[in-house]
Image (cartoon, rainbow, N blue to C red; front, side, top):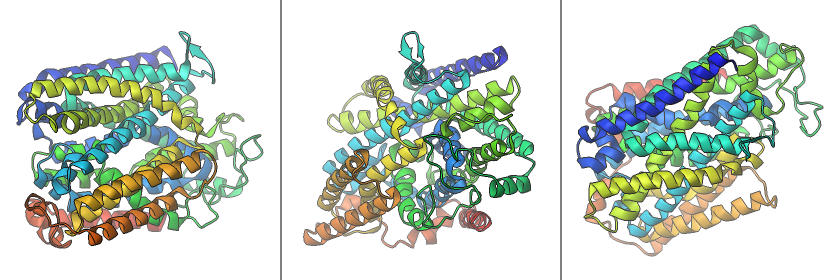
Length: 560
């Protein structure tokens, strides 16, 4: 990194904070619903392009640039399944969940569960949502961003800055910067900064991919090198690498896949994780809840689904290219010290001065946008689900103050939790393992709650509590090395158990469907398919969806 690179990074950080502060000045004059709605839901003013970009930005963090490249360096394109399959779950959000959410007119998904079931369900989901926002979204983003900065600066493990471990120092610095503008500006600041950061993120990622692709000599050279050369980690002490790279460009793998992601695990396990993450998680869905109307709420996820085509090429492929470049000796015999360093190794060895600064700024953008999204959703959950629920007459000004205090507290908790991800084989594996413990009961409750009128409030609460306990038990078994099975199949097994629990308890103790919940359940699952054109305002809704599904299908045929 040259002085020019650091000037670019500094300008970026200052500009993002300034944009967030500007949003805090303009926020009270925007939107409808008072100051509270303006702070937490941007006054319900978001259009579909902003929703799609903001959802994509809330999902894409430094995890994707660093962790997907790390996973690809070790295992190839197989982890790209988590990106392309997201497109199918976003279609589910657009067609089946978003219309129901908009009908309920809620600010949070726990609030939706109370309207559909009861207050205990709301409380249970609030606890899980706060955990996921602080640990899964923020913690992993801060950890990977700090790892990037340490790698770019060439700081080794154990080094200190101002008497603090370097990794922890960067975690604290990034957390504080993000917390400042999120606390001041609310969701409007988050969406504004996310829109800018997403563009910068994609530009930086595309630059690294193109430069690496040109240097490797194109697709044929890439495929030939991978098929004929040993893995760079083969023979490295402690790496335990015994596989080759011939199948690195294939997405669908057999049972002997070294990454532990055979096709059947992905087919059974991903829907459990994906439906929770994209359709039932407050951090992601809050952008849909802030839509100006149902048309924008449904088109936004489709736009996000279209954007999810690109991460495989921008974030996963660079890790594979790095493997081939090392195999070719393109770096004079040098190689990443660890798989987690693959992306920063590419940045520091391939890009010229100035461009390095742009890409490092993009890496920081990825972390900050995920943290800001999680902070705002955490503030919304605490303000609405812990305070306004017990005091409906609370003033908007008080809610905003509570949200700002929550932002500060959540930032501190995320900083404390972030080192948790250092113990997993890859950071991306760590985040998805945590999701596999959390997602099954929530996925079961939302699916049955939206599609089955017979699902009762008592059964939903029992399912949430028992499902959380089962997930925690599996986590403890894995954490202590007692049972470390296929986490995707574990997620599917937990989902089956939760569905059985909910259906059984509903049938054994039936309850009448409350009048206020009738609009929150589909009478017939085909209803949104019949009415999609009218609901989307004649916008070619079905054609867009069909185009997306065909595109993802063709991609799987090509990269099977």
